[in-house]
Amino acid sequence: MKKTVLAKPTKEIMQKAKELILSGEVVAMPTETVYGLSANAFDDEAIKKIFIAKGRPQDNPLIVHISSMEQLEKIAYVTPLAKKLAENLWPGPLTMVLKKKDCISEVVSGGLDTVGVRMPNHPVALELIETCGVPLPAPSANISGKPSPTKATHVLDDFDGKIDLIIDGGECEVGVESTVISIQEEHGDNNGEMLERITILRPGAITANDLLEYCDRVYVGNGVLNKLDENVKVQSPGMKYKHYAPNAQVIMLDGNFKEFCDYVYKNADENTGVLVFENEESMFEDIEYVYTYGKEDDSLSQANKLFDVLRQIDKNEKVNKIFARMPKKQGVGLAVYNRLLRACGFKIEKLKNPYIVGLTGQTGSGKSTVCKALRDRGVAIIDCDKISREVINKAEVLEKLADYFGTGIMYADGTLNRRELAILAFSEEENLIFLNSVMYPQITKVVKEQIKQLKENGENIIILDAPTLFESKANVLCDKTIAVIADKEVRLERIVKRDNITKQEGKIRMKAQHTNDFYTDRCDLVIENDGDLQSLEQKAVRVIDSIKQEIQEKAQI
Ligand code: TXA
Ligand code: MG
Image 1 (spheres, rainbow, N blue to C red):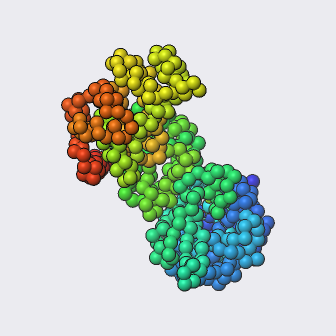
Image 2: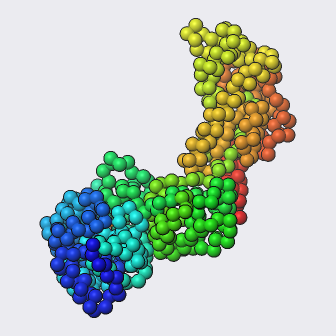
Image 3: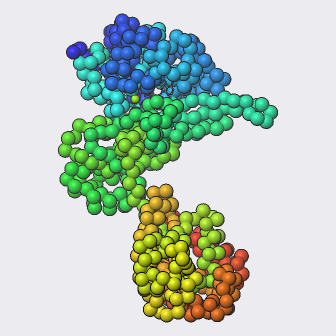
């Protein structure tokens, strides 16, 4: 057990830090992002002490901190874009992954042939690197998996008795770790000009927009917003490990403040806490554990507070679940979201329900034309006719129908003779009622499953294309209902052509259908089809645009 000293960076303390590092020990130093656990880059035994103290997997490489461009050239191959970035954005919260030179051992690089390098923008860190005269690899000074330290006391919490010295440089200015990037420089196909591209492996305070000033394109690595499969080879090993999670389970709620409050009131118990934005606390007087992390519209302030508050939550043994407000993902917000997502173990609850528009009308009215026009514009459609065709082939459904209508509705191979069933079903009202009583519950079940899936995919508007919207009572699922109607003659002509049936069969089907009034009385909106398909499509698009606007206006309130 060591005696850990936590002290301000006086002359004596900086001298002591230098002696410790040059004699192969580990020292915690402040940087503008988070505190780092530093040691001599060229002393493998010292570097191993960092891995042991943190409990860090050996394949997770360290970021090497430097204080001059000479040091950069000494440890890595510097490409033209890397040079440009270094000159413009260093010292600062940017780590570049570059091809390493031999002086950087595999202990530092985690076995990779690259090295992450950064020049921190903190006077204490820069002075320490300079006085030691060697680059200092320094991972964040936390036990692996815990939130990174933004105060010297956080480091003490994790490493008391394990390291000799923590230099106290006050609270870290940024609060989340540096942006880690890889650089791709290739000759393009056309005139061989140099394409300069950057991939963000870990987002931080240097944003995609900041980087775009110096290159053609910036990509966001696939580990930034998504959970990576354990076995996948990743560009940045750190992205695959569990991170930042406090003991309590954190769940990010994706919705506006009102939706957040409603959800919390319905789902919180006495061991539940909330993590909200500043000035929102007063809405949670009934909740005992209320934590905040910065202002809603100020991502930097969120970055600043997040790790500290996650550490506070970790210390509270009474709270076992935390509902957290979701940060914006723009700019520095992407870094905040990325860290909170990991603290949540990727658990997000979507609160926003998609807006569901029921679309109905008689057969031949032009409903399919409307749907196609909307689908072409990217609107999600649930096709109840299609679901019905799938459901009707289920063994349990076929059995019930054959019991009632007789085996004449089946072909010899046991499959359904749809035409025969249609003739029987439409010939008497009672038959149609029976058919529907078998089909509707089955269809509704599938519709609900599809809505859930589309919600998870992030759709915020869904068209429920349902010829029997009201008969099946699926209208109760809808926020708005729309009818497509057309005159009898228009409809008859369309269905005879479409289904290749006689006029007589067409008339029988139409007789079983409702009048236009049935729809105009029940629906919120009506689209009339006068036979001109182009104008029908235009009407459909106008209606959906007005619904989109309505949704947007509601969201702003
Ligand atoms: O702001 C920061 O970067 C802080 C302060 C102390 O400078 N340091 C820090 O280090 O966050 P650490 O070790 O906690 O995180 C380093 C991240 C890890 O995700 C690691 O996998 C990635 O950078 N990394 C380091 N070297 C790499 C390399 N050669 N290739 C790909 N990723 C690398
Ligand atoms: Mg770390």
